[in-house]
Image 1 (tube, rainbow, N blue to C red):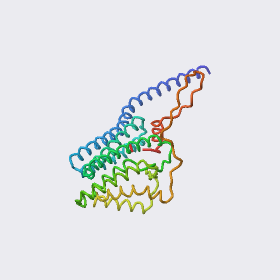
Image 2 (image 1 turned 135 degrees about the vertical axis):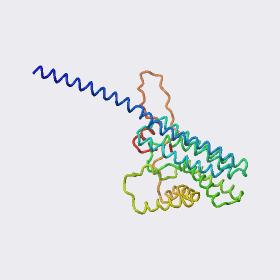
Image 3 (image 1 turned 180 degrees about the vertical axis):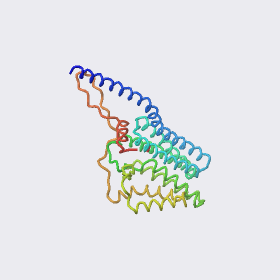
Image 4 (image 1 turned 135 degrees about the horizontal axis):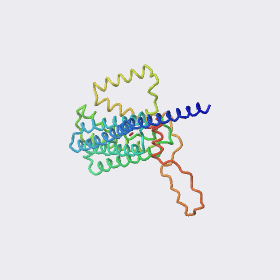
Length: 308
């Protein structure tokens, strides 16, 4: 009996040693792959940031159509990095903050520069002021999104998303070039109204649909598949006008939802007051609440959030 028990114990020890070595070997093999997967979404975010910078350069060089195309490419990069991070479970607070900074450049500064150099320059100081207001409201919209990400309905955005406003400006520039229009005064007036409207929608509480909550594994109806095919055909036939039409449809979807009676949930406070620290050592500390980056990272890990 003792011999059997000692033999069993020895066998269990050998199994533990072997399994420990296997786990160590697995860590050595998977750690570089894990780091590589972690670098993929950050690399895509960096590409989107660089594309936004080159869009600014193209706008200053008066290559407006190229700048609009670059902003559109940055839009796809913004959607791709979050999707890869969620699929590979490599979301992090660093990635969330870096994605917000990239969005501010690619979808805040770049479209504002395009709008000013393409349409608002004849307005002089007023054109520069409206363009600067767009950048400020884009930054406020991104900051509000970071704060409210874990406390609002995941199927709706609160206000027009910054990439949606940027693609609307880029699509307008592409459509203007496609139809070969040449009316600086009319373009300046249209540009002022467009940028002001987009600025107001970004900081508003108008509900906008969020496609990140959709379950892409479910079967889609035949009508939806047909609509996607039609839009794909139009995108190849008339890419400039189709980009403008899709951006305009999304911008108008928010006011349409509000006109149909849809409202956002109870307003979430953005500027939360910070309670002063007590000097009394005997006072019990207040329960810790998760910070905004932690809430966003947790939401992305669960798949309820995405670059922007």
